[in-house]
Length: 429
Ligand code: SAM
Ligand code: SF4
Image 1 (cartoon, rainbow, N blue to C red):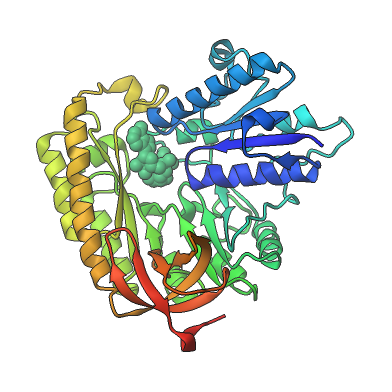
Image 2: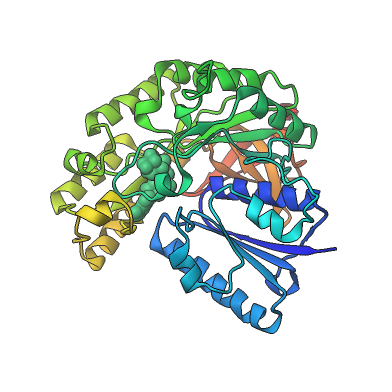
């Protein structure tokens, strides 16, 4: 039996791609191993959003190169966002790699291990479903991105938006829920763009309604949201379909109109604030997280101050902050100088983290004493854990069955997680 080792870095979409590839390997009879030394094929699934992620892939590749020197029969594939349309530069730099595969272009990888007669499936292998170990699954619903924010490499690597048909997604979710999944996270780089390219033009709300009719499915999450694409109609679906969680990942990126315009985000600070107000008016207490880039080209102290003010005003549950990383091939890389010194970027990053930690703690303090619906996702160090409908991580101080929905009374709140005990009367499923 052939063995595979799969290493993944990057976003949830990349994790979903790896799960799909793993499902394909399983279909061909391969077995997963946890070290490259034991594998017949190694796949490195890469991310290119920031230099740091690329550096991690490079170091992984260096390690596999050493193994391959001793065992030349080992097959090595690189997939994901580091692989663009042209692979000449990569081939030159990593001559020991057997296949470079763009995101979701699995066929070349499968051909390394399959016999020619075996069915390698189509682009997204509609009939090969990945079933995760636990009760939560990622389900990509729209691939690619049409936005071209100036700093971002994603549209160049994942291509234009391509939605999967509603019935294909329903079949996949029905399958995974029949195999123990209770919560799905619908994925897209801009998930509200779902459906505009399909003949009947369903929107994300239509998809949520269809999925919510599946009995075994308990909860539906969705990410990542794009302010301009989040229509009133979609928000109504989130607010009214009971299985859809009140949990938004809504990146703002910056709090200064000058920076937002330079990034080509397509909204102003006040438009973004209105969107948040709309969400909160319809769903008071919704969990809202955001992404911030600090040190974008030309970001002044004044611009950064506006970002900090925005964070204080909007009070997000969580902020994912990163320093600007120039990405060759993007508009910002070609036209703008990376002119914010590294130490200024680092100081701004730290400042955002300080603000975020304080605000998260204050918001989480408000959960103390409340009872929250928690889906038990797993058990770590003998302690069950899961998430509230608003996306808060909860550690549970008693036995709880993985996959069950439990009412948990929150006893302790920290900035990054909550802790509490289940209420017997509130075990929900
Ligand atoms: N589509 C989502 C959006 O509209 O923001 C996010 C997808 S993007 C792959 C994930 C996050 O990576 C972004 O929100 C942004 O904060 C960060 N990111 C993207 N390019 C970056 C860059 N060149 N440097 C630093 N962070 C970057
Ligand atoms: Fe990148 Fe912008 Fe598309 Fe998000 S919306 S993936 S940041 S180009």
